[in-house]
Image: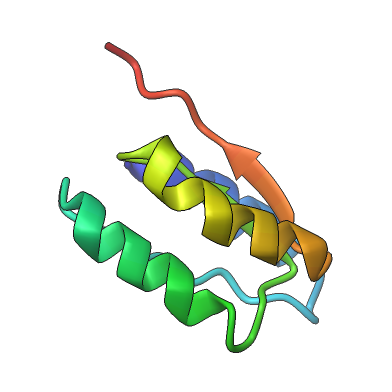
Length: 78
């Protein structure tokens, strides 16, 4: 969402070592899982995510967390 993008840009502006990268899964849980898996090759400093299927994302999120990635889970507004 726009608010998420603004938050990421704000966080990014505070430290020149970090870059905000925004990926949108367009409501496709399978695509989101693929995007997460791709992050394990080069784990990010932080990840802000609204999981479409938390159960499916959890193993990859735990892997990223073990590498030191800070993970912020967003709870979608219903």
